[in-house]
Length: 342
Image (cartoon, rainbow, N blue to C red; front, side):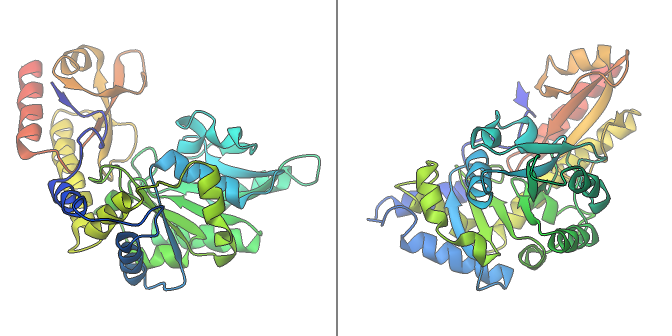
C-alpha cells in the first residue's frame, strides 16, 4: 500500500546518503563547529546574498520553533499564529511549555495579514495581558498555500511598524519556492523576515533544519539557548553535510519542484472526476473532497490522512507527494480511481 500521508516517510535522498557515507570516514568536530557546517553556512549566506545573517543547524522543525521562539520572547510575551499554524496545532503545546502563549487567528488559506493581526494588538493593550511580540507564519502553510512577495513585504513592514518580529517556518520552503504561483526568492527571505528556517526533513534530508537569523539582535547568545533546549547535536556535522549537499547544484529546488509536479499530476486526476478541493492546490499537499463511498475504497489502496467531513456526503482526504513520489505512483493512483469509479 503506497503512502501519501506525508513527505518525510522515506529515509533520505540517495545523494545525501552518499554524502553522509563519505563524511562518515572522516573525523569531524562537534556541536555544529565543524567544516561541513561552516561550508554549508557560507553556501546559504551566498544564496541569500546576506553575509550578516547567522545560520544554525537544528535536528527538526518543532525543536527549531521551540528554541527560536523561547529565545526571542521575554516571559510575558506571546506569539501570533494562524489558527491552523503548526505551533498551534501539531507541536503538543511545545511553545506553551516554554511559558509563552500562542494567540491564534482565524484566517483564510492559512495565511496571516496585517488586517488580521491588528485587532490582536488592539485587544492586548496593557500589562494585564500577554504582550504580542512575534508573528509566526509558514511557507508553505499547513494548508499547502503560499505567500506572495507582496504579502510577505506587507507583513514585514507591518511588523516593523508595530515593534513585532516576523518569523517564517520553512518546513516545506522548497515546495513554496518552486510552486508555479510563487514570486518569492531566497534573497527576499533575508530581506523581509527577522528569521526563518530552511526545511530539510521534508525535502529529502535524513533530518535537519537550517535556521537563518537575519536580525542580529536575536542571534545574541542563541547557541546557549540551543544547548539548553536540547537542540544542539554533538554530531552536528550530520546536518552540515546534508545542507551543504542540498544547497549545491540546485538540488534543494529540484526536490521541491519534483514534489510539486507530482501533486499537479494528482490534481489533474481529481479534477478529471469533478472532485473539489478544500484549499487552493498550490504545492505538494492536496486536500480533496471525495464522496464517502469512493473515499472508503481509496483508503483501501493508499494511506492518506482524513481531514474530516466538509458535508454529510463527502470526506476530505489529504494527499501529500514528496521528492520520492514516482511517475508509477501517480499512474497507480489514476488506475485505482478509474477502477473504483467505473
